[in-house]
Image 1 (spheres, helix red, strand yellow):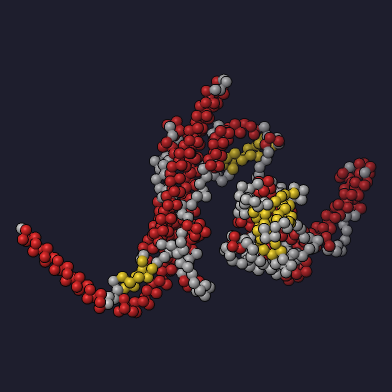
Image 2: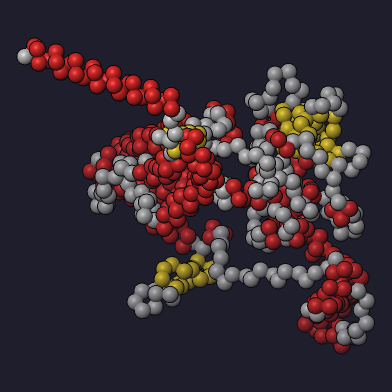
Length: 604
């Protein structure tokens, strides 16, 4: 069925198809080569992979058959974030460049390809292709489809999802096409039961006199029914054969045909366009009492839509255009769900921090980012949301004062009664978003340390040398091997950053405390502060324990190194010259003390 997308797509996961079962790109780390069977799914994870050449295996090369389809036919236009004009007029175009920076597949005569840098210079709306010019061979142009072009300003994960979705849809369609082609080519040896008696019955049911006047229509209908009958019989035979494992394996090897997925069930309830009229059954509520699971179903007529619309509009803020506009402004300008309270992006840290970095420098970097993010939540977010509510209240009062008659004025004043519910909706939304920020930050920080899980043993044999994250020096203190800073301090600093993720958002003011009495009248005024995640929540406790365990795993190697140096403890103690110098210094200090005491006694 058509669900509003082009082409129509059933709501099934594109990761379930065989072409993505080997190694889905979304699980691949940056710099890791794609696994077998996913060469054409490969999208560069970062700039370092651009220009890396791959050679598709023979089994991966596409083979043109009568069931092969072009990939562009299955590109989902809903996944396109900009128009061609917006892509080509990007402000990030280099000075003097012929077009916008991008990458496209570049094939060699040896059958290899890489995503090579290029410039997108134009777009042809007739065939949907972009004109590109290769960066390494200026003047050499090529026309490519959208799925063969990644703009530098485009998100690589977003494009990877778009490419994988198109390939999955094509695989599903081609599998269905191979199935139906095999059905059409199967011989039909069953007896034809659509005889003259069946024809006579059709004519009788359709109208005897009319059927005799239009015999060609009857013939066409009989041919259509006969085709449907033959196709249904052959499909039943094929489906029965595919239930046998051995026969199914033979059919798959010979014709690449597998059983079709069962059709999606038709829901008993759905949505209708009430303005078109009609009638049916409408679920308006759940029955009370002991029958809480039994819906209250009433007869519905199309004209009842406007009555229900007015009733909903009197109690639901989202049904009012003014409140809906304010809510849209909140999501457009103040949606903070993408905010993180920590910055552990390695590429960003490498630009401003040395590698390895001192512990204090990492701590200061994270504290500064956390302080700025938390201040934005505490001040900017609260102030702007309060301004939205204040402006909305002023607009309703102004509309009521300028109403042309008493009825309109009463209607506008009635809108003010929805303001407390609207403010409460915003409070709940903000609370949920702040919670999302904290949990996402916790997951991000835990995921950052998850890369170090296993300690030195996890990378033994894989790399010869691993550059550490934090600079810790092995020093001699009081004749013993020690660390500067101590390993306990490293652990405490990292766990302190984690703990402050939760603490940094505590105490954010509830906006209802900044609104007038008319806003909280009749509604729960809430507390002085918003509800925020607790450090005792299971997800937060588990993430903290996982980070601590990973840190302790990575301390095993340095502690073993310090133990090896302790075998030479006698060499780490003070030398004879140092002891002699210390003795002389002690004698001089004692003599000075005696002289000072004698001078004090003489003065007394």
